[in-house]
Image (cartoon, rainbow, N blue to C red; front, side):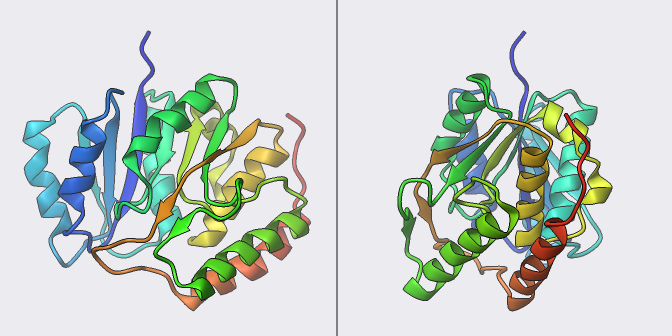
Length: 240
């Protein structure tokens, strides 16, 4: 039986990128499906996606939420939707081309080869980031270093948002464990998978900063992650 693969793409004001990212994924040889989770984008992102569904009625899906509810809750909504529809692999990816769609088959292949979680990693082979100012590169790298040391987790890119999960991992993680919405969400999910004994691997990728649209980064996201990591350090986990 052929694997069912779902790419979950949260959007908020991504009208410049929405159609292009969908087309790029559908041009791949893998029969990947896409779920867009849009947080009521005022720029009309959802309308653009909706107009494309008749061209790809079985492969393109849209969930529209009532407001900007956060990255983490968007992915949890997507995970629940995908698990209910029997997808084998569920992938997180940004809409802005910072994650190259051409790397999707590599993430899926890593999971087919024995991993349960594969991370598109910016830092597993040095630093592979393009178009970021040096200050942001250093902040991101040191954030992952901080997480790795505090949580004792052997992952170089702890805040990465380009990730493939085998469904078994998501079925095992109670979503009520996830309290953080931004970078903290990404850290939490990797840590839960690692602590529950799943095989987490890093696949080197080149991260290219967005060229269109506006970044959703904020200092509050970093603050949430900093304090949230300290709380995670003392969480108790059942044995796999």
